[in-house]
Length: 275
Ligand code: C2E
Ligand code: MG
Ligand code: MG
Ligand code: MG
Image 1 (cartoon, protein in one colour):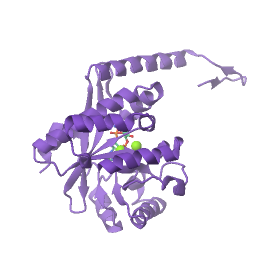
Image 2 (cartoon, rainbow, N blue to C red):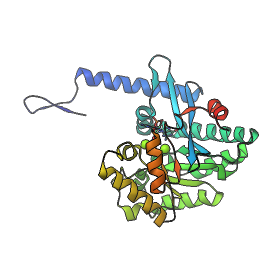
Image 3 (spheres, rainbow, N blue to C red):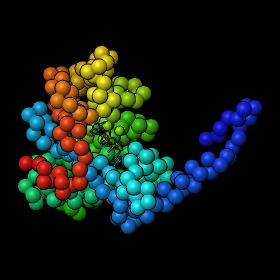
Image 4 (cartoon, protein in one colour):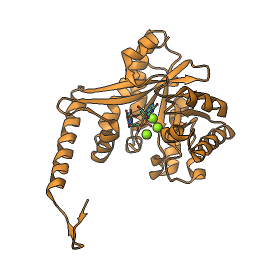
């Protein structure tokens, strides 16, 4: 990004930016190494509960433990992976780990649980995304009904008919689809609702403020009603307090996820804490 100087001129390179670019190049090569060597990366799981507080599944959230920089947030390295194309191999890795987790659940008598995975738009855009996922499902012999894919509305940057086609192909296998971060984007609602989702996810930002902001509360109510009017299920993310939970239940929300129940934890811990 070019930075404006005092005289209105544009200075293309300055020392801080060189630092940043060097940092990005370094992070890119570190991330590539981590993916290729199957190290430092781990899928954490955060439980999703129904209205009776029973665990019905989990969302897989990637964690990167960098040897020098410590924990790096996915909010930081997923965008980097998307920009550099590394999201393809990272996404393949996530999908494979997800299948392994579902396999373990089956062996542990937890086969009723559904695992949600986040698939970023450039990843979903791959021509062979459906084929690769299908191969993994067969290789690990997992029931496709145990898998849910979370997409954000940025998938609409692609050809909408192609996206609908891919979603339907995977839905025919039994995979469910959720629209993540609903309400935070800029797409036209009628356009967005052409996509055959099963479920809408209310973004953390609305839930966090719904008890103090009438506007946020109105948005949450509207999303719940919209979902039900369209025959979709609705899940709230970012449920941090008992009051959040009560209020969302009162509004008719179908399922819940948040620190009130559990933060994202390693798969082994999730299995131990799930009855
Ligand atoms: P997301 O899919 O919307 O995930 C929800 C985020 O909210 C997660 O952040 C989760 O840890 C956080 N969260 C859960 N409960 C609460 C709560 O009660 N309060 C608050 N304040 N936050 C809560 P996280 O794990 O840092 O992930 C950030 C984003 O990174 C995700 O947002 C998703 O877009 C992306 N991401 C994570 N894992 C993957 C992955 O495997 N693949 C892809 N493509 N993206 C991923
Ligand atoms: Mg998600
Ligand atoms: Mg979200
Ligand atoms: Mg998000």
